[in-house]
Image 1 (tube, rainbow, N blue to C red):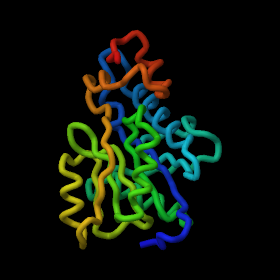
Image 2 (cartoon, helix red, strand yellow):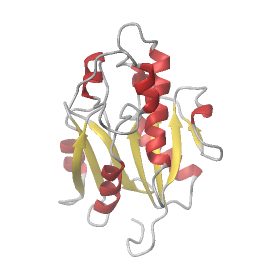
Image 3 (cartoon, one colour):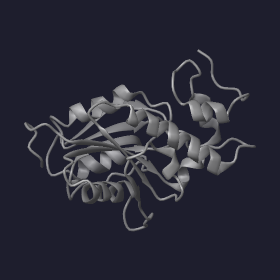
Image 4 (cartoon, one colour):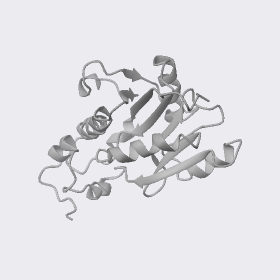
Length: 214
């Protein structure tokens, strides 16, 4: 566990897997949708202060989505462990000076940056913090680097918080922050609020389609 009194070196990693294109509505190319939501989610983390953005992806050919100088880490999706643990391990190996990281699912293109900041702040009292997803699973997980051995976060497991708390060696090691939504099926596109700023690439791709109002 890093010294929490020291100034943390923080990473914010967008995790892109093939599933990020699953919510493409009929008539929208799945890979185009994946690229749009991934770029919008990356733009969120790239705008954070005192945080280094990273793209961790099992989908090749996404280097052009990020700003010059942004680390792009390729991973293989493995059935042996969750892509989230693989992402944390890759971050620790690639960026050895980093002491904290948050891994964010790429299918959250309208995630408020404030929620990411809250996850980092909670690490002052917990070993892991989770932004839970509406409908189960998680949008993001923040943790110290290296990730504790007992922690096997899975953004897609409906009971991911319960699993982490059961595995933790002590009480109150796993905290939760405010939740948000992910785009995991075509009907989830209706969760996007046209009144919220950002998600410009997804907005442009879905131009002309009915989104919620108000």
